[in-house]
Length: 229
Image 1 (cartoon, rainbow, N blue to C red):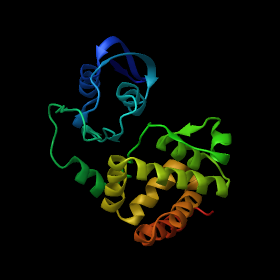
Image 2 (tube, rainbow, N blue to C red):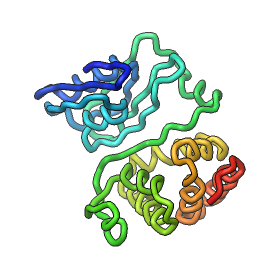
Image 3 (cartoon, helix red, strand yellow):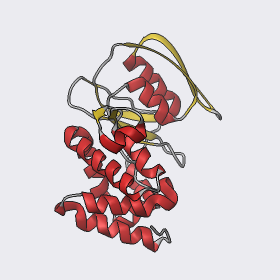
Image 4 (cartoon, rainbow, N blue to C red):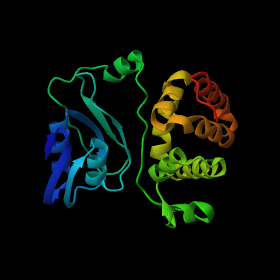
């Protein structure tokens, strides 16, 4: 594992997944917590990858929550799931309260992701060109289209995946509840640009009554930032 200005290079053959993850964490100054679902040997080769791409390649279909290293702080990786062996990496020099410091500084909240595939049909299947999609696939689709109906379908599909993946749902809800509407709005604007308002509106229309008030508050904050539908 090598980390350069161009990104992360990873070249391993039949190496235990846990050993590769530990080395990646140490090289990128990323603390790790959780349970590693599968420690079987892996073979992988990637170049100029982001930290998220490298983690995805190492973990396979296990869900995770990643906070990037920033401002001299260490990053953190939470392995989602209740099965497997407990797995921990503590980067030397880590300081407590990293997430609180980021929140106080106004950084955008980290959003959980999952690569586990779930069946999709209709227009989603036609647009994606496949009959199954992950939560990350649908988030990417919602953030890359100007078609309001397709955005709504992608958001609704993502919500169905949350129902099917309890650990991911818990992580997403925890993130949403931990940050006020203005920071969630800033996250949408930074990550989705001019499509942020459409995605926020689709979420507000799709969530249940329990989350609608906060979703609608996020829509108002996105518009207050000057992003129109």
